[in-house]
Image 1: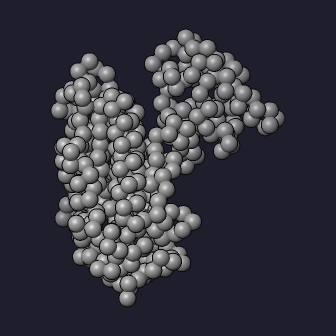
Image 2 (image 1 turned 90 degrees about the horizontal axis):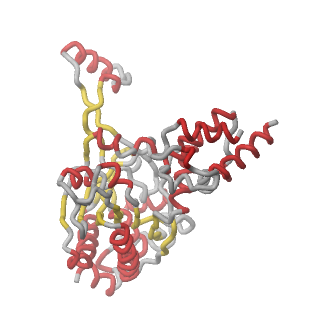
Image 3 (image 1 turned 120 degrees about the horizontal axis):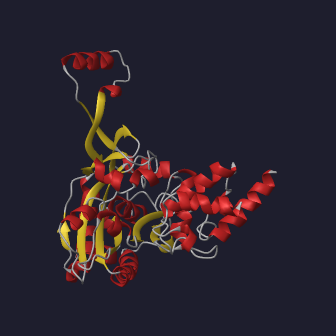
Length: 81
Length: 309
């Protein structure tokens, strides 16, 4: 699952640097992701995993790092199962 | 009689009181009103008070029309964030046969708007939108930045019977373009100036963190981003409701969003930052009528001194 999230970020041209140069803890916003980029990422992840982020997770914090995103996706996928 | 009094039962009741007193004039469309001479005089006087505060800043004054190039609205990302508010101008571009069809549709009471096509013009949603591409086109931003004084009629499609939510309204704006320090210090200065001015007009107000009305679920993300980064503050005054006060002034820090987008760069190629303070002129006038009544001659002396000198 972590690899899929990383692959989505890498495939979306959201960052001026390769996603592999970032650790799971690095800030995607500091790496150059825009606010609207985070929205595009949210929609791509929802489609990939067939999940819907609840309002409580639609925050800058959720999308700030790959770690944060992975936790949210894991939580939503397990709730769906 | 000096009405409406301070107690406002509902936004609709306040709107009807303004109609009854001929302060605003009905047109048949919510949010689209005529303004009485006294309403315009209050706006003029308020603007003069704003100008007086800013006179030493030596801002460059520009007056854009209320329409802007549609392609610039698209590039600015307005339709990504606020598709529900945008307005584009459409016009008939057909031939003689199309004209006959159009007239026939109108005569039969049919929807004729399909006979129009989009023009190159979009209605300006905020006074500063036309500014950034023109600054970028003028060459590198000087090291000490730029300061502009703007005013425009603005359009937002949000029909409502809250008089504080008009579809066509005027916005006076000061826009600072420069380094992050320059523009955030400009915003801090105007947060103080704005609050002092509104308090000097005898209006209750509070400044609060805010977010723009971004559209849909993605909008929740954008709003959360904006709030978490403290990019927008509003000065709120109870106008048509005590529970939901109206944003009459807003103080926005855009980071280097517009600088990067439009290539509004310093000579070293770095994108400039920008910030703006916007005065909702109709909203502030409505706040004055709400709190001091419809007879401006009866307004408190200290308020009249600020506005009439």
